[in-house]
Length: 151
Image (cartoon, rainbow, N blue to C red; front, side, top):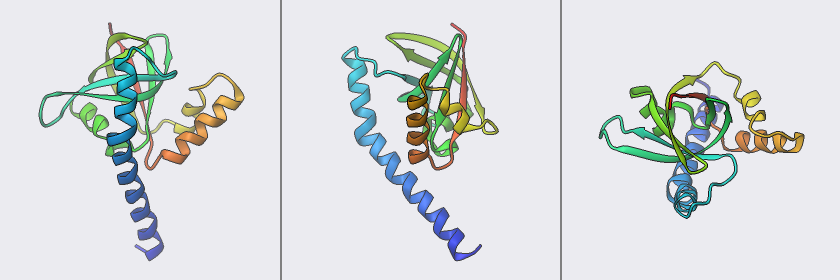
């Protein structure tokens, strides 16, 4: 491996660690607080997974796009995200969308075009560009997640 390749990989890992810490200790608690107050930020949901080691419920705020009984998510850090690893161990999830909990089955889609998927998260051209830019700015190894709502 060349030194430049090491630098890119090391930079990506560092970026991922910083963003995960930022999300865990600042962004996610703020969004969870909004949900507790009954305020659902547009395009957001809570995903509840079962911890792969502890068996405890884990709830994480995510950005999503719903199409009927299918909900699309983008895991910006792919299989490095804890909630994605929980899904790998147990694909049964629950989603809280607009104040209601739904049961579902999650499917990881590493072959899906994440950038094209991110464009579907907004209806206007400006919104699509902003969504794509936001995902690009925060992603390290993005992966699409499809959730089929079962109930």
